[in-house]
Length: 264
Image (tube, rainbow, N blue to C red; front, side, top):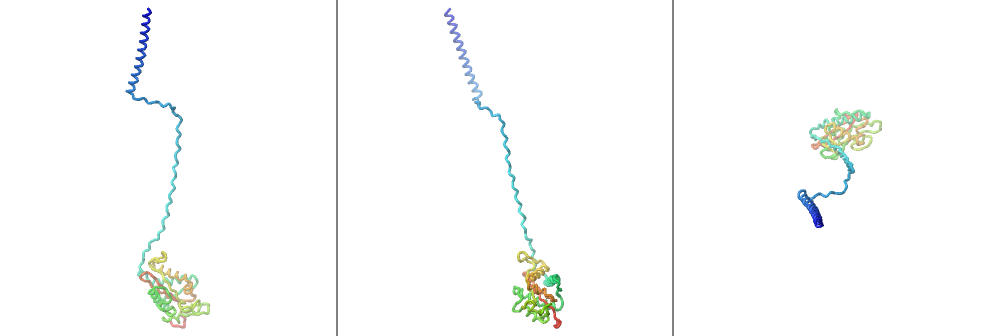
């Protein structure tokens, strides 16, 4: 009996060992099979997930571009069209100069000067010759080739004719004394400007009226010429103008009041 019981015990132990070993082998082979078919398992990160909401980034402010100032348009000087000297009428300029002088005289309550007639024509011939002489010399002066204004009055038989008593003063007005000063150009104004071309920083005389205005304006800037042209009881004027081929303008004006004792 004892031996049979021992046999049963040993057999049970063996059976259990077989079952244990077989199960372990099964799991071993099963694990190897899964490794071959599914690859290396991905390890699990034990760090807990952060489930707090991700803060929304504040939008970056886009800088506003500073507007570029539009440059002011550059002022441009209009291009002047050159007017040829031969397109200017010298005789027309002479007439307009007389008108300009008379406008200033009448504005001051003085009588206008006559620019036409026998004596004014004689004066005009005399001053035209002097304007041509100034143009030939290229300079503005009362004395050209040694001849002063009083000399020209004498040479043209106008010296004695153009002598008169000063208005309200004890003085005799003549070619060499206008009651203000005694000199050889007491009744004369001479000047220079340009016709049809720019001069003096953009000035431009485009026609006869502009030329005449420029001449008279210059004369009235000189107090000596202004006094002569504004002599209260002068009655006549001769104006002579010449224009060169380069557009230079030379002008002369001489005054007179024929006295009754001299022939005209």
